[in-house]
Length: 434
Ligand code: UGA
Image 1 (cartoon, rainbow, N blue to C red):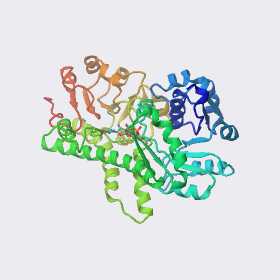
Image 2: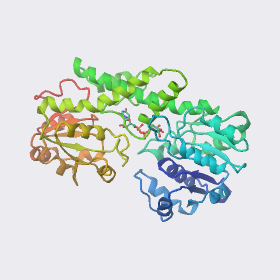
Image 3: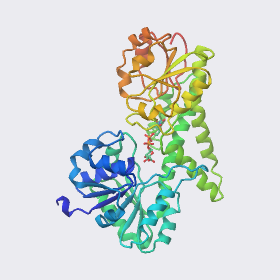
Image 4: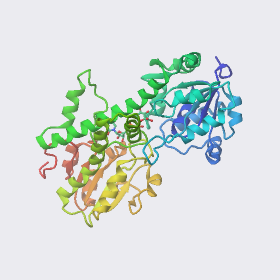
């Protein structure tokens, strides 16, 4: 089948999810028309430039340029495709509920048109689809939540664990059409109702966040009782009912999804009259976890006033320049609150980070950040940090102390280089003797 025969796909909103969706459907041979309200973004993408850092995405966009059209014009989109993926942001409002204003404005733009299938990729509270469906009786509505992870989004799109497709009975033909788009990718299909599809997305993110807060608390107990959390997680993960994923302790989860979606689910429950107690703890544990590093530093250095602390990594996770809800934001604010000087290096997130971290000095290299520091904290597990010459770093630092916030580096190697190395949930790692 050549590309002309494949169903055209429309994408509304070319942020991170929209752009990955557009590029991947183009790679599968579909003509794709993607619409965004921001003219500069559309112009840049039309010239073949992308502004987000996502491995493999630039290559995909380049390879499929002839199948991709970017526009600000809603009519052009509506004329170009029947199947419309909505990929607009649903950030938290002041109340913490999901802000649906961008979804609403898309719905308003579409209301005159009856022939399209609206496919919701944006994360929305359960019940949103059913209410949009009531407003736009002529339009088919399908919920198809995204499960992509930043940094591996292209890979995740091309090899999904599962594809969730939710619809009301009157839209079951449209739901099958959507499922057909994903069939070449394999994975399990969950054909369900709209509200259940919406809940699958929120519950999945909330559950994964719960696992992280759980293992972080286990790590904290391990430090107290003389156990090693990596061994504990390995032993737990071999139980098939538990599984090995998302049991890496650290200095808290961040990003545009987990913090927002955990809170949104808690509020969705609360607004419906149910108190979701467990999620309060998930959020609180995560906040405290970001701050524990400060007490670890104080344990070794005493008061932090005037101490120079180097942060290795700023992005909320590696392979992205995304700073949303990054642990580095809270950590650097706390350190500066204690009177410390903070210096940082991140391979790609520094330009995004600069305006968010006033007063934090940015370095061009990791070695430059480490030079003259009293301690370093590994915040984001960028692979290039494994290549650092730690012997040179130990010489250049005022005191060779490293808190590994992601248990990422080789403790033995660091200690041989003369470092006092402390990880997360590793008993005895704080001892001078190592
Ligand atoms: C998350 C979900 O994993 C995706 O399935 C979902 O599609 C996406 O949110 C979304 O709703 O859009 P993402 O936020 O890109 O993806 O990143 P993750 O890889 O899930 O990591 C989130 C945070 O958890 C990071 O700060 C990471 O460092 C932390 N994390 C992850 C841990 O601390 N421990 C772990 O074991 C795993």
